[in-house]
Image 1: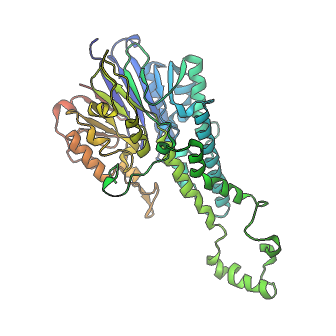
Image 2 (image 1 turned 30 degrees about the vertical axis):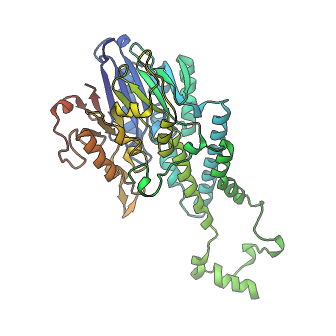
Image 3 (image 1 turned 90 degrees about the vertical axis):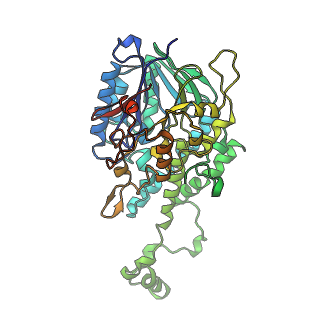
Length: 474
């Protein structure tokens, strides 16, 4: 079988992942080519969020002629799936989905997946409850979770973030089939032209799922196996404590006989109560009040949930031909997910050949979809990028640097994220010889217009429009 033509379309200006792969000549009849959609989303608060995603959804529907051979959802974060909300009619209600691929973590009835989902959902609900209580108190603690997990109150008539995957499951069940993938599997993409696909992650080991940050010191994994249930209980222990604290009828740190209600402490109080008023509740002493300070615990819990959701990313390596080039789509996999790829071997696609390793797949990677918008802890060094030795390596980064670092009135609107992380970007540019395609830059140039690549052969394989950057593999 001859090597198929493969085009990878990265929708740009999103600060979110949306990739459309076409296997086969896009100019041939629809029955002779396959289309694979990997995620479809944009970050919260990006200007014109809904309008941009509706335009993207319309373009996808037009390109695939109303039929997607495969939809891959890597994980449940707003910047990866909200396009199915904004473009619901085109991508869900009217789209024929032949196959939907999800990680094992989404499978209902799987004891491990159900346990993980239950713990995460309960912890998310706790963050939402804390955010509501904080809003009443005039404190904002929702930012860490809203950017990735969606708004506290979605627009009327739109899907909530947690409703998107079930809606896709329902649609794919009606028009095709839903499959839940396991690490170490070898699958073939559906459609008239299929591609061998290795499932790298997420791991089923709790020690991998909850490792989001690199090891400190010279042995750090990036550029900056215990009991599963017990590991999760320990991970989210604070969620139950915080939920209990929200209950006004729940336990308190002091015996009721020593409690004084705030309504009893007034300006006209006598003796000790008046002292409390003057020292704690009168206007010029309000700075001493710490009644709502504990609500700030919602921030760290939300960030923990964000990292853990990233580590459940479905990671796929598409093989162009048996033993040949690989396209690596790592979702937003963080440290634990990357490490887990090396925990297992994978079936060879060459008859009679021994199983292969993650190192072999990384050695053959010709295109790397850079994880988590090229942040500091979503690309491993020694067990990741350093193993990508393909002479024609190309990197695609779905990033909008100005948006990631955007500030308003001197304050970071999106927390002033360091995306792309400078050290990682330097390494990517070195390893690819400048063949880096960004969602916010002209091919061959960086975000401020400086030339970073003059490879005419590479640039000749890139096509751009107002909506996307498309790369044709050699």
